[in-house]
Image 1 (cartoon, protein in one colour):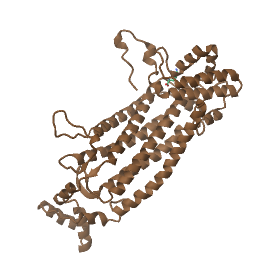
Image 2 (image 1 turned 135 degrees about the vertical axis):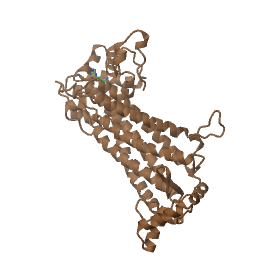
Image 3 (image 1 turned 180 degrees about the vertical axis):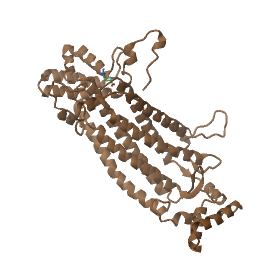
Image 4 (image 1 turned 180 degrees about the horizontal axis):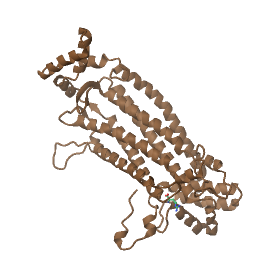
Length: 450
Ligand code: ARG
């Protein structure tokens, strides 16, 4: 996905090149062909296109799908290009595809078909991330780490506890993703440019052929809205922003001054001049790309906001940002999954700091308040004075972790139990996503004649 080539600097302005979506349309080449095959089938079924001609067009479309996408510059978009190829190969008969079709309903269909697949791909990578994180939670349920707030040592907890935080965030996102899938998975096909067509297309039958779960009913909404795309992009970016915050925790723990964790060397880069460096390269790039994704989302909002209901070319310009967001998410989630698989705690280093910083002072105050029967604030004041005097009041870190029965807290047996239960729950979510994938692939294979 690239920005338009510089055209104006070359001394001539090619308006077609300036407005064309051909470059971005590479993403929906196959999906545009799928929509067309369904359309041609439908023209035949409603009796306006004879079978022999329908078969010839479908045959040409299927073989086009197997060819690399290499349109020459002169077309406005993939829809125009495919029609031109059909006419070139089949003669005037290729022009039948224009009947009852608008690029407006066809692009909306292709976008939904493509986004549907990307959501499945992203959901599968989230499932893999969750599996790694949950297993890591079990493995590190009692591996002590010092948790921070305000970037200051706060309370003692475990890496497993942090892993379950990542899992819960990812579970929330997965729920949103599968729910937006239901919004995306509806067919706009047969809606015409805005207000339908005189051809009696059976939109429900077309939707079934493409394995959509129903149709987008209103034809103005079907052709002119991008809510399905905006909403998918927006939940994805919200997740990326939240996930990206943990990059900073990892980076902080990795600083040689703290040295709480180690990562697999493949995630670290050296310096060309400073031989001692081990820079967290993949994390830095992911963090930057999350920033980019925020920018793409802002672009989508900004582009769409002033556009009236009904198709306008602004919507074409919005599309590439959605693809980029999905790509950033899929790649980044894969990368962070790999990184978390190899994360290890330097327990010795953490132990040193447990002695140095009063990270169980809060627990100490609470127990003091309970055992001496004095108000919490009085105990707090007493302990604050001790800390000011350079003492390190606290309780045994293991006791601070194991002694807590709070649901969702750091207690290792609570962590292990939740992680195991979630792994079971995850398998059923995975089966559901697999089912979606199978139905999408089956429809595609049938239409492509594979
Ligand atoms: N290329 C356009 C897009 O990607 C679809 C074509 C609609 N063009 C038009 N002139 N109505 O959104």
